Length: 241
Image (cartoon, rainbow, N blue to C red):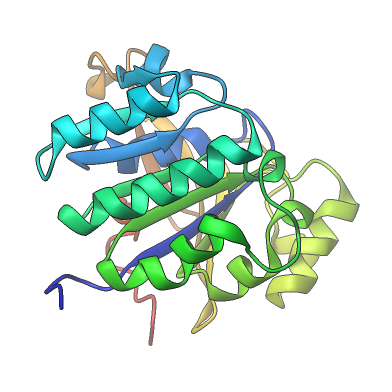
């Protein structure tokens, strides 16, 4: 039995340019071992991940990394490629705890029960302690079994009242609590409901290569600064009690 922390399953929901990627990038930069399903090649062009364009290249990169640090992106778009990615990522995580990022889930999964190797990854695979992060633009696009089993859900801007109402109904919160503006966020857990709400700004004093316009600052509406840790939990927030 592996002696590791519990696995984490995080679902990030929000439209493009809403701050979802800012939050995700803040987590990724704290992780030494990450493999990403990267349909748009963004992890390669923006974060410097090693690019893999075929299944063979992905397996070679994972085997070469072994249990050591690595940042690997599988640039693919098809459902069979995603299922292969999930199986390979699960095996890689068994060697040493890793971040597993699954972008644009709506294109490669269905809205029923998680199936195939994706289903195995988010059920059996969690026992080996991975940090699994999936992204979608609308709540309607999330596997319902995955949403129900998520460690936490991070929500950014929803652009229509219909989408706001849908995710609010699923989580048991008021539609008005769902962010409607860019860079605003909400986090929810099945244990406590809404655990954090706030917005992001950028500090020029925190400029560096990875944040040329300034590092992000996550703040509650009361002005308390929050910092995401390597699994995406905010500081000073209780997620289970």
